[in-house]
Amino acid sequence: MNSLLRALLFLLAILLSPQVMANVFNTIVNIQCNECDSNQAYHRAALSALKDREQKVVNVVNFNQFDVRKFDVKKLQVEVCSDYWKSATKGYCKMEDGSSIKPLKVTNIEREKVILLSEQLYQLDFFQRQKIQADPKVANTAWELAQNHYVANKLMSNWQQEYQYEYSAFLAKWQQGERASLQANIPLKNLSPPIVITFADGSEVFAEVDFIDSNNQQHFSFTQLKDANSNHLVLAREKLFTLGDKFQFESQQNNDFIKMKELVELSGFMVEVQETLTGISASVVSCSPNENAC
Image (cartoon, rainbow, N blue to C red; front, side, top):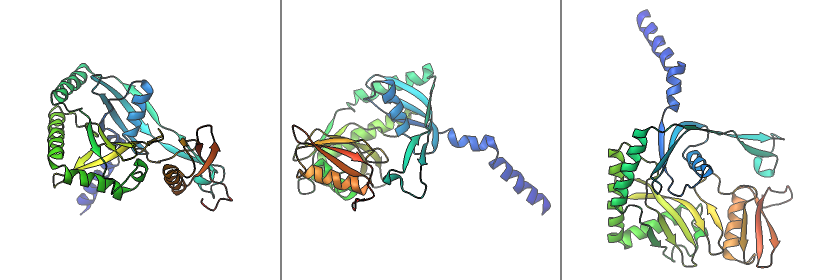
């Protein structure tokens, strides 16, 4: 009995040893960023690959440039409050970025593997843009999709059902690309052709393949919104809005403004409006204690 207890204690000591704990951070993540065109863009892409309080090695692959950059990334958001009894959305607290990104050397073998995979994907015409027309019965504007999982799922489900040939061709191409990446031992977190969903008012949502389920159905994630007023909103980040975000609209009666204001208030902020020569400017600001909406 004592020997069994000693063996269990020894095993527990191994599991809790610093060497074993350190292995938690040895996971490598590969992420596609074909639009990365600066050091800052590569850094943002590397950070976007992780959740808060994660530390991993991230390879950012740019197939347009046949390039790969490697980083040791620690993602850490720290809430600093002047009054810990109050909420961050009331303006008493703010999030400070404690993340770190350390560039690592990419070996010639690693770079060659990326170049070979890039050539394979271009031979498959993998990066041809997939255009999808949103069903107006489901949504007329891109803002209706933001943070509305039902609308997003319904739009993509309709596309898969009503354009089966087009969807099957897209699925086959994605599966070929996925197999090529796995054979090259470069599984990418977001390997996908660019997808653009166009709405009746001319607004657009950009998407990518998220994963494929056991029923051979693709699931999608939505990365960016561009509305009919030329406003952009990043949909992929953890928080939809941040303090200081600005948008332009024709008026406060504009449907997109109404939807944006609703989403901002659901996020715990409020909208400050100023008149401009061409309409209104809407800024995301901290809530006032006197505002019922907050």
